[in-house]
Image 1: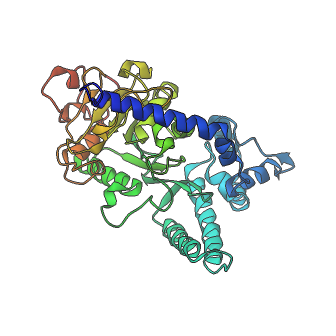
Image 2: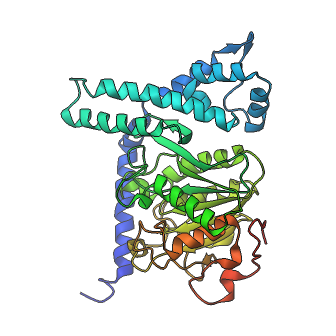
Image 3: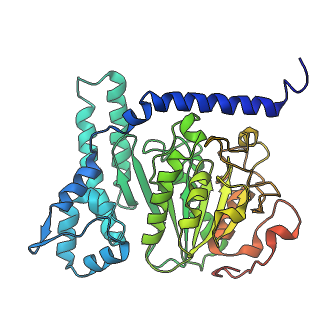
Amino acid sequence: MTSFDTSPQLNVWRALLALAVVFVMLATTGWTALRNQREAGPLQASLESWGHGRLQGHRLPDPDTAPAQLARFFASLSSQERVRLAQRYPLAVGNMNGAPVGLRYQANRLALLQARAVERTRMHDTRLTPAGQREAGRRMHRFESLTAPERHILAFDPDGSGRVAEVFGDLGTAERISVVVPGVDTDVLTFQRTNRSWSAPFGMAQALYGAEREASPSTRTAVIAWADYTAPAGLGIDSATAMRAENGAVRLNALVRALPGTAPVSLFCHSYGSVVCGVAAHTLPDRVADIAVAGSPGMRVANASHLRTTARVWAMRDTDDWIQDVPYMEVGGLGHGADPVSSAFGARVLSARGADGHAGYFEPGTESLLNFAEIGIGAYRSVHCAHEDEACRAGLSGAATAGRA
């Protein structure tokens, strides 16, 4: 056998072609269509109910109306009327971009209490397998934990594996806002972990919020743990394509456009979350000041300039991160493009010292988390670059609340 026959490049191409064949077969046999044939979930039912609702004899506005218009609608109501809508349509209001943030917190708490009751009933449903009953129990306990008074749930959908977004800090008064966008295997049950807490979305955001406050106690910050898209499950076909990322990008864009105030926003995108951020980049509003990726399989482009964003693009990867072994290419929709930490890509490459592999970028005490915190507060000249060159620091200002340089 020749050396060409066993080259890594040839093996990569063979793997990609094999995946392409599998994907085509699945699609042509109706697998993709069947996956989308689902009954309307609780959120959709709540939105449909809202669509038929009335207040003071007038129909309620379309929930897909621009956030600014929905904000004006809610501002025109009395506090009692707003609460009444949240109580009547908790999932609709809790996920409605444009509804007041505090009202969304109230509505989602009600929705979580209702979802908890559903799962408590399912725990004892004899039609379920023992495994199904145990999963219902885990979901019930997760929903219960999310209803704690100190938790601020910005979005919640119990359908399927579940989606959730949680806020640390005060979005209304924040001078800087950070959004953590996680990767594969993210759902309501994996949103929070006890062991290695910083490897799950809740812990990532909690660690980042703490690091930002420590780095600049005088800067008012808010951090969102954004697990409000349907992430791929495992390292299968979904994680090798942009299908989940495209839907996630729409939802991420909607989130950012609905955030209150005008504070700069920094996105911190981990693993497949960086694919979401890459697909969303050209649609995001100008208030997005930074897109920082860690452990990225690619951003669906060959070069940072192709993202078509005015945001600064940052990238980091730990030397022990297995993601470096994925093929950084895109063929027939499979793969996610160039390596964001390569010099050719053109991102500002940061140090990830101490990160300890793919899931360790938000671990307290690491240089990777400190770098994220410095970006989050806008202290750009304090970041630790991976290499001592001008490419990482070129044109940066150092003010904690600086806008784009």
